[in-house]
Length: 343
Image 1: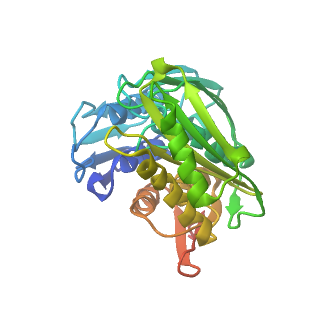
Image 2: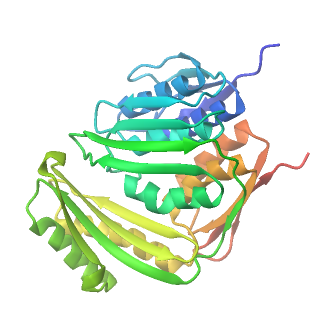
């Protein structure tokens, strides 16, 4: 008997709608058809990093696919059985390595054997989590849930050149529920200004801005000069470690943006989260949902509902019998709970 095809409207969000659908299709074995992929973006349809995610997912589960080409706004994905193994995925541009990894990782955790994944492209991109966020914030929480995953940054890659690479080793893992509603006591805070192929004062100006606005001490500031061959590139990372969670906020240098304005973008994100009292900021909230679905439950608090969080919930509830309940706990704190749907 032919299974029903899950129909999705890609216009409810951006590339995350596609990536979540790919992950869920692989782990549930359900076929989906998505139309109007990234319809509201300035360049709609599949860009190279989205196409790489599609082809990576297809390789991991031997999927049959239709519409997998640059610019396509319609895709049909029919998954097969998940296979561990040794994988290499090259984006070919500065498209995000971390987003491709997050697409295939849920399936690889369920594979019958261990996997090694190398992905080349951009490791530090605007509009995507930098590899530092995965290694210091996201993956430690997945390990607490039972995931055996190790990520190594082999080479930084910035927009527009790319050329970065990550190496990831994954053991088959059974996840258990995580409840992350409080941060716990503060442990440490640090700022890192990474520059490659740029004048040294770029990072210094960014760290000066951090001192003025966040009152960090000189011992908490780190100016990191990378191999010029990785550049030109620049990222500011703000790391806050608490008992139960570590958050990493980032902003990326652009030719037309003053160092102080660039630093403000990361500082504003950090300040918003710090004053909210919520356990996780908006990006980590998006990225905890799928692991919690794999675990069959979990909860967290985050400052507010976002477009990404809302669209991610919509896609998840199409694939799995899970209820995701969101309840406001004051003006700047939203409690999100994932649990099995009552029959």
